[in-house]
Length: 250
Ligand code: NDP
Ligand code: 8X3
Image (cartoon, rainbow, N blue to C red; front, side, top):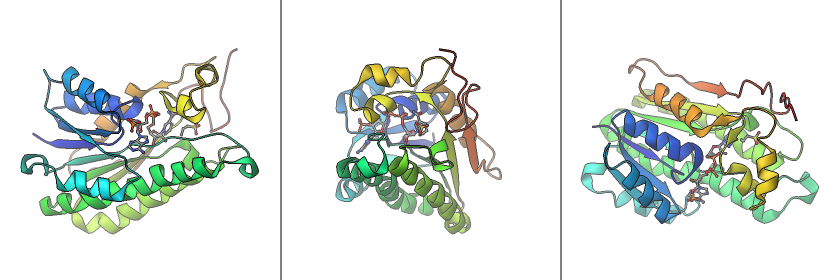
């Protein structure tokens, strides 16, 4: 039975991906900071697969290294890594941005992805195969007003995905990048610091993607034959044409 490690499996795209991959027969290492949610997921999937909850903050390289190094031997043969943990923090003009928000986005979205990849790749190398899916964003393809540092963090994910694909090509490890547009998750609640009304308004007047739509794509990508790699996919709601063009009927 193959093993998938999904970061940010407590919510949104990560959680839906853990469920989708469980249905494909994967054992799941589900990571995040909210223990109860990881345990809930473990219970929900109990009839389908085995879930190993692994609690760590991706910002801490020590915590990441310790968590991966402490995997029981039967969980070390990771076939698929989904680097999903991340968020936007704030939506402000550059000159009004908060240093704490900037640190959070760069430390989680960029450095967290680096730390987890650094810890997991050696385990994949031992097997001579593996598949890494980095969750980028349309924000890593187009900069939009007030998106500044979040966009920069996702442009970095785009660059790193390309770089990883080049450097890992000789190892047999595939690297894919999934770039979603607007997906209705807890993303905007985090971006707007718990303002649920403002968060909900992001998804009004059109049908946004659901986390399950992105999870289904990830599930498709990781089940292609060994010689096929879907290197980069942009997935948008039908009502969205670019980072800023959305057909809203309010
Ligand atoms: P959610 O807020 O629903 O989920 C974010 C996940 O990231 C949670 O599971 C959270 O877990 C985890 N996470 C956040 N910070 C940390 C941290 N410091 N350490 C460990 N885990 C962390 O948002 P989404 O599902 O929408 O976001 C998932 C990914 O998709 C992100 O990379 C986001 O940038 C990207 N994305 C989202 C889009 C959208 O419109 N929603 C569009 C394009 C890309 P916990 O809090 O338990 O630690
Ligand atoms: C999340 C999508 O448009 O809010 O990456 O940046 S967007």
